[in-house]
Image (tube, rainbow, N blue to C red; front, side, top):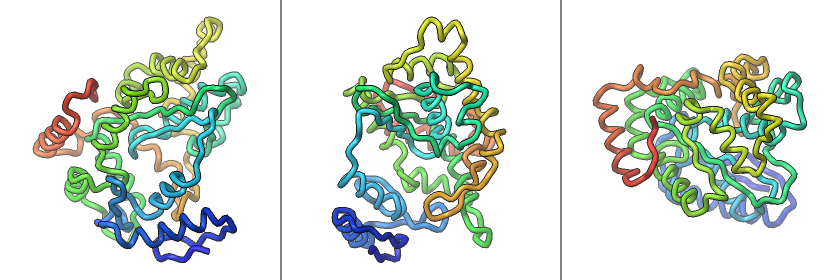
Length: 299
């Protein structure tokens, strides 16, 4: 049994898991720490900032996870389109199994769907990133929804300062993006790199690109039946956010989170309504410096 002020108690008879729990409980108190975006402290672990719970998850994955050929891993920095991408991928790989009028996405939140399919391709990663200015604004709104009502909201200025310093959940944001970009260049058959802006601008083309990458391209018959268009429509922000299931409250990790919290505006460029010219200039300078030489942009 694990006992630590940083984690919920977990009972397991697996000696390997017990060892990982023990190692994690001993490690976390020794890590550099900073104020979190809600009440959690953030700890600096392997180059990134995260709360204690994901550190344990990372250690469990490192020690025990063995990816299967059927696994599809959706990798994103928070608030970059994770829910949308999960919905698109689930719809792509299961398009022959469900009728669009009676689809699991109409009953379940995308976060609850398992992304795997029958086949013999190696484990693959689909990564999506987003303009850091929009990420900051979205993360700031989301964090304030998670803060207890008796705690004053996190100011945008404070969130901006933390984000620019790299102190945010799974930050620094730019290091996260850069790591996956390099992986996609080195292993293009295993890592697909997308931007939120491209998927918003060219959803049909991006859905076809993802299907091709996963080894399940659309047939001429499916194209004629407008299957790609049906998937884009089913997974649109308007469609998903208006479903009853995405207006309910779900229990995730150690705190209740409303499914509606995963849907705010889904827009590109909403940062113009929040950030000052000075903030924009500083953020752009950091992005240019950190991602120098990278062959993509957030436009």
